[in-house]
Amino acid sequence: IFMYSCIQVSRYPGIHVFLYSCIQVYRYPRILVSMYPCIHVYMYIGILMCRYLYTCLHGYLYTCIH
Image (tube, one colour):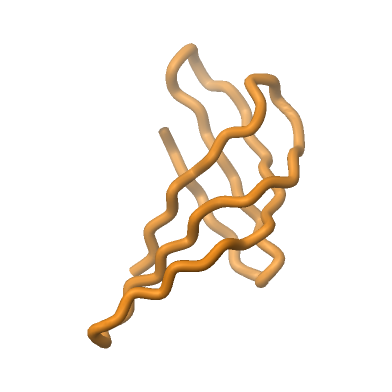
């Protein structure tokens, strides 16, 4: 199970390098919290709804929809 706190660094469409909080919850009784440098690619769909696509350096691909 992966939970992410998405951080938006710009109000304009584009590609940005930023850090976001990555919380990994395992089946084991522990929670690992760390920071990853990621490339922020997003596109505005409406006024309040945005679609975020995160390509992280550790090889995973995440999608966050607000």
